[in-house]
Length: 218
Image (cartoon, rainbow, N blue to C red; front, side, top):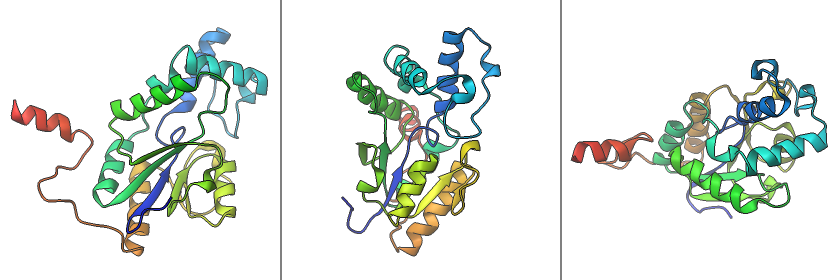
């Protein structure tokens, strides 16, 4: 579903907004009894360099999500909240799209912890979509880190910003090395569509606006 008059940005979560790699690393390190620093960031998609085949990855991923509640506790990548608030203030429609329901069972935990994480980290969004086939969700542009998602979206004719990670360095095209860069790219794309609006008068910018309002009124 596209939104008339708005610039819709499809935003991935893991590896774009949330630090999945380090969150998962900490769980794997405990389970394997190793120093987390010995588990190096992946230079290609997957975790076979940590000694995890597909079966072991799925087992530990499910354990991390359902037992350790990783989706509730992962760190947010720097600048994500404020950048998305500023884009939202410009009139960009934030549509969070994530493929987190790819293991059986535990879906209630995944959904509730995802929503809680978004709220606790003050991430603005209008829609939240859980699905694997991202080209089925209409957006004017997408930001993603996974090579297979980027390829599928672009083959379907979509504009995709690559969120810079070690495992996607061989992908050409629009790339953001930080959320500040991503914000600049999206702002330009929205301006080209004539779908930006000035911040409403009296509305503060920034993800901490509610806390500042509470402090000011107390």
